Image (cartoon, rainbow, N blue to C red; front, side):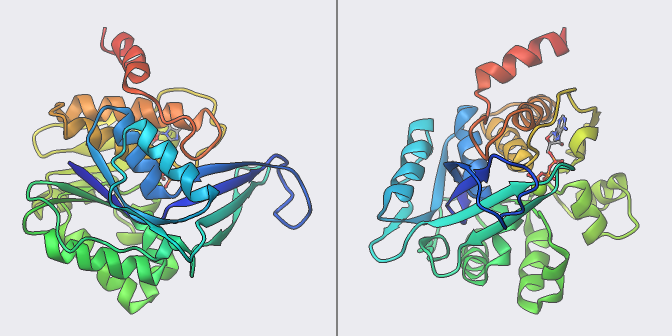
Length: 306
Ligand code: ATP
Ligand code: MG
């Protein structure tokens, strides 16, 4: 079983680019969102067994998230429902150059009021999205759970690092602990630049494998991915698509990759499938609206293999 822990949100996306959330405009949403939720949903979409740890409010947004996750196959028995707090929300608007502005409501909502279990079944895989570490309450819940289970579970870590977090002593100690103790290290190119200034993706892969990781995967956006499990090293170019919405591609990629590995797929096959999943994700809009099903990934995989 794979476990994901962190913020559960509903997201609203402005129709108009360039409004910067500073003028009145029309929005689409609410969409179920939150990096760990996008990840968990994608694990389920490729047929993996996954359970989400987080909290929603006893309100329509909470019911929307619970309904989407469970109808896609995510176990929601560890998602708490707060009677008094509302579901976390995020608003996002894009600019013409693809950059974006967010307004998050996480603090003091159900999203950062996580009642994490003290333990997980031996042999499980616990996935951490670094996006969650910016919130001190969620970070504390993650630090505690990882500390409790790291001897008996595998840990995967996608840093999604924000440089300012490295200046926060407590956040830095959680980040260091996750880098040291994760079994699957899944940074993006930008994470590599921030965490290992001046080092190449290949250097980080070698360095981290030498310190005992099962696999290191460097996600490179429209350049694809470079990765190794110590036996096989692969560099895959990106699958050509028109990028419409890059948000959540990394979470989708990690969900497909780990979801398939956990079902016994070979490293290189899981990586190829995840590279396709990430490309399919960016070609449509919405945080998890277009998390691809395994059958749709396989349709693209077959011609590549032939
Ligand atoms: P996030 O914004 O979710 O944190 P990330 O930086 O962690 O994303 P990316 O490298 O942007 O992750 O994307 C993950 C994977 O998705 C890439 O390694 C690649 O396989 C695929 N991907 C991302 N962008 C594109 C693109 N423009 N074209 C094709 N594939 C893409
Ligand atoms: Mg990322």
